[in-house]
Image (tube, rainbow, N blue to C red; front, side, top):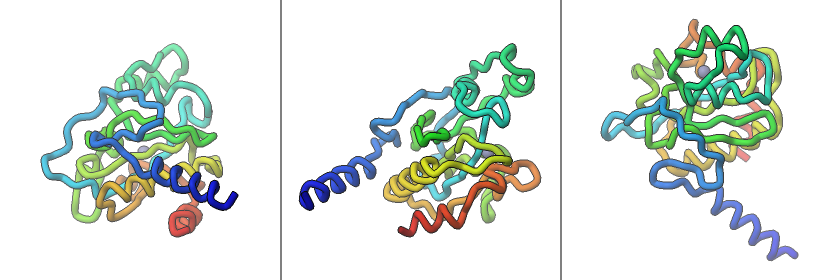
Length: 195
Ligand SMILES: [Zn+2]
């Protein structure tokens, strides 16, 4: 009994620490987004940026986010989509409300998630960061499965890349962005990471 559960933990750990050389997470739903390009040469990945998004705003569970990142948002579906349909954006990962994850951009590529941004003295955070979107909003707490999935993902990414800092989009684009917002519980996230 003991040995079997040890074995399971071991293989779960092995699974959790793999990432292909392109930076794809095996077993994760991969929906390639065209909204990415090469990172600058010899630019290590130093930063993890946490975002929140919901489309339409405040509504969860639809296909709006995946459509936005694929440049095929239907402007007839919602008035807000008319405003944002010309955006060319993406993130490396999306973690949905029940913890399901979708990958849109391999970590080796530069996803277009941060926009005009600054971390320490460096601008253009997309060059050296990985962007993770949580399906959520400034008005709603995130779910326990989302925290668990985010912690597991963070551990994998830290295993592979020299990540020095984890920040919210609002930290690197203050005055312009508010996500992940007041309901993202940073102390809960950090406590789970340490454990
Ligand atoms: Zn954001």
